[in-house]
Structures are given as C-alpha cells and as structure tokens.
Image 1 (cartoon, helix red, strand yellow):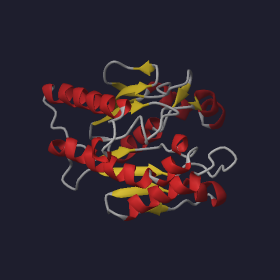
Image 2: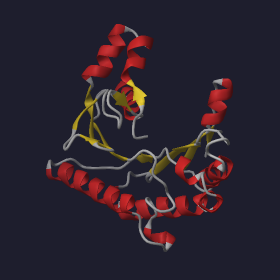
Image 3: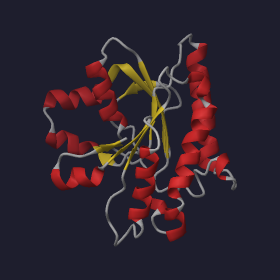
Image 4: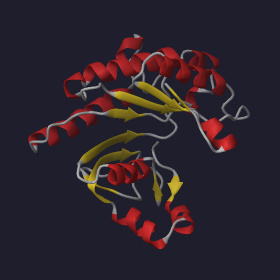
Length: 225
C-alpha cells in the first residue's frame, strides 16, 4: 500500500497516451500522502511517483484512474498514510485491543483529522466513503501475531469507524482489504492472517477482502463480503 511499484513498469507496458495521463494526474482526484519518507505536505493531484520507493507508485494511482473514469464531474480526496513493513499487532494496534496503542495508529488518526479539517475549512462537505488496507505480511512471521490478526483487525475497523463517524457516508465507511501473498517460505503463517481477513469480511456487508491469491492463480479474482 505504501507504493513499491516502479513507474518504469508503466512506461514499458502502457501506451504513451496512458503513461502521460498517469504522469499528469487527475484534475478531480487529489491526494495528501505520507508514504514512508515521501510525503506531499498538502493535497496535490493524484499521479505517479507518490509511492514510498523512489520512482514508484501505489494503489492510489489505479484508484484515481477509476474514480476519474466513473465520476468525472465529482471531486475526490484521498488521504494516504502508509509505512511499508509495519505490523498490526504492535504498530497499528488500536485502543479497543487493550494493549499499548500503536504509534502508527495514533499518527494515522492525527494525519487524517488534520487533512479533514483542512478540507472542512475550505468549505467542502466531507464524506468518507471507505478505507483501503493492504497489510499483514509483518504479522505473518509470528504464530501468535497471525492468529490474533482477525481480532485486532476487527477492533481496528471499529475504532476507525467510531473515530470518524461524524464524516461517514450515508451507507457507512466501507473497509476494503486484500490477502497477503501465499509465500510460506517467507511469510510462514500467511494462512492465519488471510483467515483473519476473511472472517472480518464475512462479519459485515461493509467489509470486503480481495482474494489476491486466486487473482494470481487464474486471473479472475474473488471478492469476499
């Protein structure tokens, strides 16, 4: 989620017209981002090179492309706070898990609040439609962390929805997640993490997880609600 996909891949695999589109960004989709050490400090047009690695991008680029295509007359703001290699069991732990609240959780909430306040002061009627989450690899190294992943994720989502309930869209705040890769040689307990993600998705119609493993295997993919 922090953004490790290289821009040079786009240059090799899309048309010159599409590549220019990614470079120039989208006039109706803006982003305030903190991707590790790379940050915008303000809302800017969403485009390439907004990832954590130099010369890289994250999922915000595809999201902006789709939003622009489907809703060209609406304005969207993406708030991105992401750190590659971070874990849920300690760094993102939310208050309802009754441990020491994680530093990344606290900074994420602060960053989001500041971004929303900026938009409100600009007279925007802010509505949060959803949150995207792509994380879990760092919790797959430990059997205990991986088995508690679903519980901590449930608490995390509930805390976020409560914290920003004032700005929730009419249908609520959706939570879109994705499986981590099936790589037992590296992420030993990936199955426990993905099971937690699946159980969270099945618990609420507002929760969704994308089966990225099936996507890799047959090119079709599955969305679990």
